[in-house]
Image 1 (cartoon, rainbow, N blue to C red):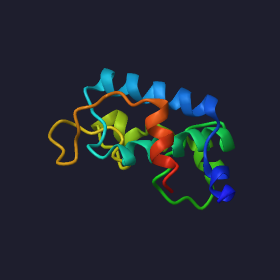
Image 2 (image 1 turned 90 degrees about the vertical axis):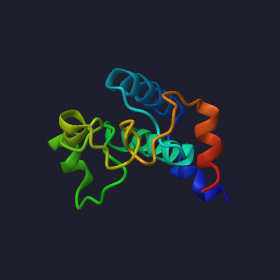
Image 3 (image 1 turned 60 degrees about the vertical axis):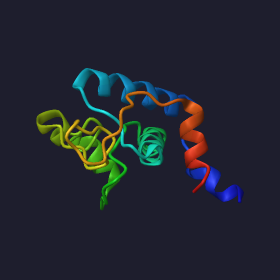
Image 4 (image 1 turned 60 degrees about the horizontal axis):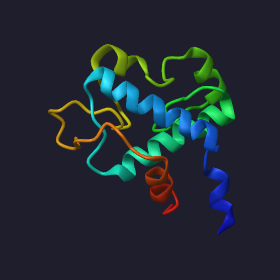
Length: 119
C-alpha cells in the first residue's frame, strides 16, 4: 500500500504544475478533459518528472532515455506539438471541438490527490 506513494510527486512541484496547467489552459483557450482523473494523472506525472529530472517531461510517452529527452526539450510541457498546433497527446489541454473536452480550466490540489490516490 505505501509503495504507490513513491510514485506521487512532491507537493511543491504538484502545486507548480497545477498552477501552470490552469494558466496555460486559460491562455491558450483550451480545457481539461471531462474526466478529471485524466487531468490529475497527467499533472501528477508532469510534477513527478519535474521532481526526478528537473523538467516537466510529457508523462504519456515512452522514452529510451528520459534525461536525454529532457535536454532535447521537445517533449517538455508544453511540448512542441502543443505550442505549434494545440495537439496535446496527454489530453491535458483540449480544444473545444475535442469529443473528450470538459468545461474546466481549473482543478484543485485536493481533486488531483483524490484522483491519483485511486491508483
